[in-house]
Structures are given as C-alpha cells and as structure tokens.
Image 1 (cartoon, rainbow, N blue to C red):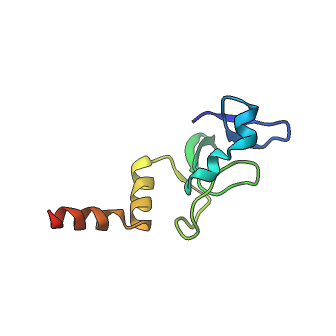
Image 2: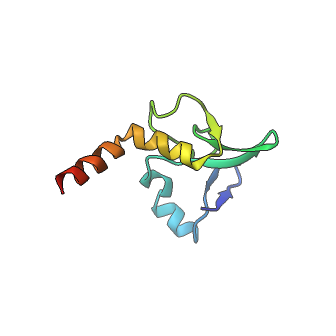
Image 3: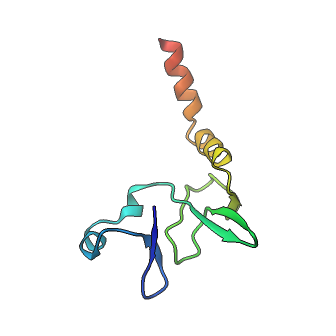
Length: 95
C-alpha cells in the first residue's frame, strides 16, 4: 500500500482520511508489515522498525533488520515460520 508521513516524520499506511486514522489502526490488523526502500543503490525489504515506521515481523522470524528485495525468499521464511507447507501437505494427504 502507499505510505503517508505525518508532521512528526512517522510513516504509516495511507488511508482515506483522519476519521479512519483515529478509529482504526490498520497495521495493528497484521502480524507482518514490511517496507520496500531504496538504500545504497539497491531495493531492500525493511523487517524491523526504526521507530518511525510501521514495519514489524514476529520475534524470531528474522535475525536481521533488512533483506534483499526478493519476495520469493521472504515468502519461504514466512512459510517455514508458520509451518504452512506442513499444513498444506497434511490437507492433501487427507484427500
């Protein structure tokens, strides 16, 4: 989604207005929020907050603050963390 920066420099998801911002915490509805940024001549995924953005990942999912901008590699780590492949394999075996 697009991002918005407030007067204090905090970065948050862009919404349709102040009323929604006051009533709903969009990033609070997700356990994983990453951000793609251009840094040192390359695009990377930020995985941990710098205190002014809404980036977050569960404890233990990643050891580093950022990774290469590779959605397939990111998806692999998320699937391993939540053991999603094991659930999908179990469901297909039951059929």
